[in-house]
Image (cartoon, rainbow, N blue to C red; front, side):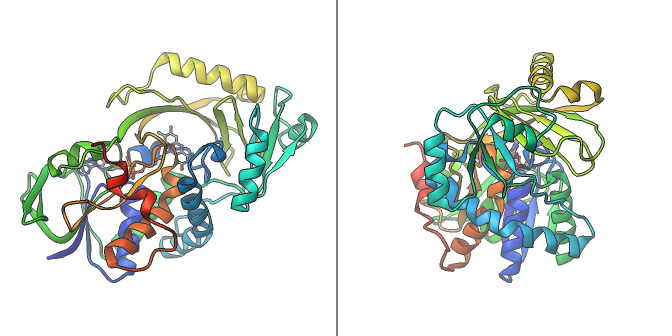
Length: 364
Ligand SMILES: Cc1cc2nc3c(=O)[nH]c(=O)nc-3n(C[C@H](O)[C@H](O)[C@H](O)COP(=O)(O)OP(=O)(O)OC[C@H]3O[C@@H](n4cnc5c(N)ncnc54)[C@H](O)[C@@H]3O)c2cc1C
């Protein structure tokens, strides 16, 4: 029998599997479609929340833990698999702030390098800017990963380590017995385990409904476009009026994103494409000369304040949840996976788990 079955093979499910296997447990992943082809593929890979001081401290604590883990994780994965997740410390330039004092205070509390900069300095940092950005802060220590590469590396490393992965096999429900889960139901039969983790992104609330836990996790669509440019043309992650550019190492520039409450509708729209182009061309006019390679949409696992749900089900003793990472699932993934594994294996967690517990998030 499996020690643990994880439902959902996005970045959260796969990193949780890595943590649990490192603790000596055998893990099976159940994936409805293909691993990491939902939000974890669609995301931008910025390793910081946007405007991080506007989130509850629980998000900053988890982000700090993850940011410390990322260099070692990327190096280990590249070594194990030959796939480089392309961690880049490109810095984050944020403009148009009316809460600069709050940003500075937050940076002091969380020991984050953050400096207010003038419009001239902003232009030096990113010479392609088309507008003189006002009220800016520069966070030089922040960066990005190339999330599709990161998750490809994760999958390869899990395969290599002997994790079982069932693809195109959705979890359909649960077999419950005496305050526990005995098995997860699938079209190919029930799968038993000692413990179960729900890491199903935007689909989490539906999967937990029959267990008596009602979580306020809902799909929030995000659309992005991708420009193909020469390496080094755009240098910094730049955030202006809620929209951002992310320059990849090979010259590609991602530009995003929309925030749309449209249920499980994942298609792209002409309206969003035009709006993203308009924002992109005004922030970085050089993008007008580049071909647009791709336009996509993904479903974020939205939660009311962005604090993910990590921990045991309040009533079913061997069922755990790791979900609801909203706009920050890439940056928060290593810390979340560690926190879940700490709770499942009975280890002392490095930070207080209370703000993330399912009973705190549940809708009564
Ligand atoms: C446009 C956009 C930009 C973003 N930018 C960033 C960013 O810059 N930085 C950042 O940190 N985050 C970003 N995010 C957010 C981030 O991508 C998500 O928070 C993160 O990917 C969530 O990971 P996950 O594994 O929980 O969900 P997912 O990647 O969606 O994975 C969940 C998996 O569960 C599977 N599943 C669902 N139901 C079942 C079932 N019944 N049985 C089996 N499997 C099931 C799904 O098929 C899916 O593969 C962005 C998201 C979007 C859409």
